[in-house]
Image (tube, rainbow, N blue to C red; front, side, top):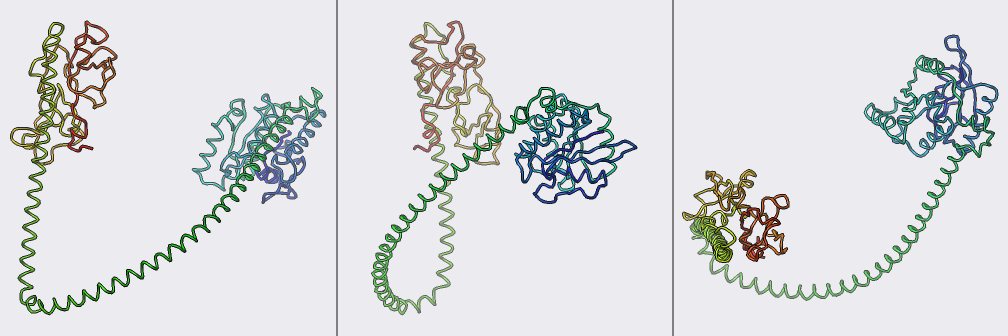
Amino acid sequence: MLIAVMGVTGSGKSTFIKNVTGIEDIKVGHGLCSETDKVQSYKTIINNKAVVLVDTPGFDDTFEDDEVVVERIADWLSDTYKSNRLLNGILYLHRIDAPRLGGSSSRSLRMLKEICGQDAYKNIVLATTFWDQVGEADGKAREKELLEEDSFWKKLIAEGARTIRMSRNKEAGKRLLEDMGTKATAILKIQKEMVEDGKSFEETTAATEIDREMTKLKLEQAETVRAAQVQADHQIAVAEADRIFREEEARAEHRLRLERHERQVALQRQREERRARERLAEICRQQQRALREKRLEAEKQQRELDALVQAEIEVTRRREAEIKRIEVKRRKDRANVQLEAIGNHIEIFNMGCAANFVNIASSAHTVLTRFCDICLGNIGASFYYSCDKCNGPDDSFDVCESCFRAAQTCPDEQHTFQRKYEADTLNGCSRAIRPAVTTSLSCDRCGEAIKGLYFHCCICDGDDFDMCLTCVMNGRGCRNSQHRLGIGSAPILSPEIMSGNPV
């Protein structure tokens, strides 16, 4: 039974062989340097069966390039194939405590694929090592990445390769080797190329892959050198600019210090003169009011405190009353502007288009001019909530369905709301009154912004076709003259004026 052990330097190849064979003179590396520099075979007996383990140099060898390492492995594989000795399996080791499948491990995996070939994938066992050097959660996450990523082990597994977690248990290692020995022997791709096809090592796909990797690495190194040179040139330029800037800054700072000192001297002289006058005046005032202040201080403080409290209460009351009065007036003015404009639009429409459309009833005023006091949007023919206590006796505080669901109510949280519905049966359309979206609503005929009365088709463009009053009066309706048009209203005033905050 012949099994090759492969992997990058430090993945545990020599440690595994030493553990299962019991051979003590096998060199095991504990640092960054490679201990195996050539292909070496070690024989052991497992359950009365002879097992030969082949320790191969790591692909990421400390002292030799990957090309030299792969060529040594290829020569050994070629010699064994010529002597009719075939591998039962390839044990490939990978450190699970490596954060990612880095450059050396990635190259090692590609070399493994090119050496073995797809037909021999079923003889490969992919083993993760050093589980005692990583936490369980991190180890599982890295193992999952190895198993499921296309660029890692997924394709090898799909073609028959197996995966295991490698422990330091000697008996478990022997069982693994015994199981691998049950597999039929395999002819590797590189053996076919060098022995059957008569290719030199340089002509094999493995050597081609190494050349491609070396070319890529050289390009990356060249780019790194170029970037470093650009960075160095930039740093020199920055340093020179910084030196010039510091010199200019120092000269400017010196001038500023001189000017500042002169100003400070003048200010100090002025302050001293002012303090002297103030001290003299204060002495005179203190002499005049010393006796009176001692006698009246207590009474004066109490009177001032009472006056301040009463004044603050009165100012607060007046401010609240003024704010409420302004808000009520602003809402009434806003409603009057909208009501008057919509009334004029309806009158113009009824006078100019009576021959082609039914007249718009005057009852539409309420529906078209009722706006939400929170978002200022037209409520239209839909449910809304009304507070009769806010905004004065002649008006109510109205909130649309959307704002009410968002827990936005009138200024007084203690007030109760009544749920109301603004009925509408105009023009026989189920959505005759369509709330305006924003002041950016535009006519789908002329493209102009819509303000005031507008018309809406519930059928055209998926219930999204709006027309201004001018287009409809000029005979430009929706795309189908048989459709019934609903009406709606968009704010006449801008959002800033509607909200009482003009820009």
